Length: 353
Image (tube, rainbow, N blue to C red; front, side, top):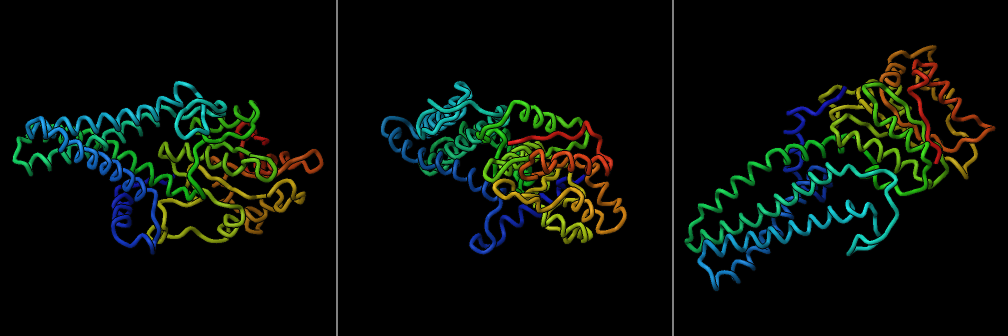
């Protein structure tokens, strides 16, 4: 299955550094880097102001350390508030100031991952603060030894977070999601049975599982599929998002050579695949693509395309299928199709929104 290599990382760094944003747009990795430089800048600006206030009553070195520590502490408190607010109350909120109201999460956020993100931001705030202190103290001919030690410690601590988050953004980017969304953001009605099906799919235990999502227009099918799959991408798994129409065209096209592929993997060698917009669902009553017709296309109008069938047999797939009812038997037909290509029945689960 596809993985991100050192070569891919260097290629991405080069792509982020060379070129004009107005021409090529920005990537998730570029946005993450820009965000962290923003955190550094906020620490830098605040420390500049605080330094000249402390300098009136303190020696240069003390003024620099106090200014940097004060600003870093302010931003750390802000980040702790951002993290602990929803964690302690276990609620979301529509308020832009306080976490005081809102429904409980349908799916619990990955608190450890969010805590690590919070810690990373804190370190970048502190880095900007003490970098500014170093420059100001140097300019005023003060002793910078203590500040240098602090900067070295911060840079050492940040080695792993920088590596982890840059790679994580590459995995999310390579998935080609239409928007950024996490499972805990899903706040539309969903049954407890559906939740258990989703958790069963997420706990794949190295088995290829298939999740069938049914529902009408604007019920959250795409958001749910992206949120579920993105949890895998964030855990550094190869994920590919595509629509049914696009995927069908790729059935008849061999995968491009590695050097010609814009992403480290494609639908052939992903560990997880999202097939969206197979059918629109209510109020559109017609079934645009039936399970039988999809199998014909998968087989590229031959008796049996084993290569394409093997991909779906060995890949965990989320199918966004539109609405089901007793007359069309949409769910049974898709389950039968998957079983026909070799997917075990206990590896197929479904969700109705």
